[in-house]
Length: 317
Image 1: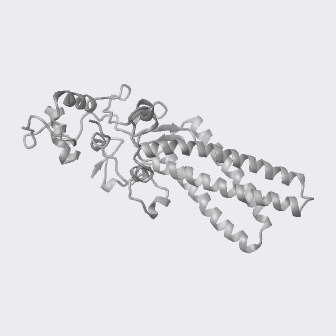
Image 2: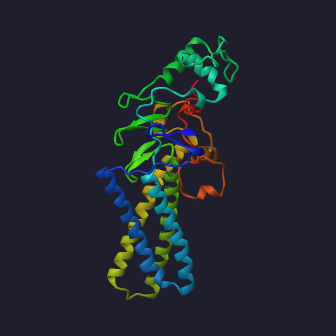
């Protein structure tokens, strides 16, 4: 069993994601604008451009295009409705039983009051990965990290966890609050957010190619095409191009989060000395699974959030 958010709820193997929607007027309006842009792009491509193809080409494009549209919409809905990784507001004490055995000695040194009769630590120091003794300064530092609390929620605040002023809760691995999904990009929603961006770019590229073909087709073969149809095609092309550029900028910023394994807020704080873990490793961390066909399916992170483990998975010392 893994402890999850919204109280001491327990879920087998990290399943049972909490679905929710944030009633924020700005976020809901941005979500509506996102679907309006998608609708214009799809309508322009389907109604004007696809009508110029033969039956065979039409159905090939419709099937491929339809799969892409479903992937975009499904990924966006998952981002919008899923729990991003909220920290329980009443979390005041870590559960030692959920901490890896290799780290319990370190935990007990920093939290002597938490050690029970069976698990008390007798050694005066613990050796770190670099085989250096853990001195009192390091224990004091770790103790400060473990006892750090949110000033607003008053709950424990694991590393890479930040308070979202819009959601009014602390979110594990909070990157930012995105108005386009009306939700935080955090521990669970980073995966569908990346997938949404990639599928949106593929949709925009696909649409641009089809629209360019449609423009060329009408220019050379249908010089008498109605002005209204040409205007609609040019409007759709412009919106598609702007949509592609904007989503590409967001994806580029998310790429920096992936390769550094640090959310945006922590990247700003740690501008120096950041490490590059690589794209594949970064995606494996964000997606919660090894590279495979499952990466194509929009869903939340497959690795359950265990708050206690967050203290030892972020290279604190």
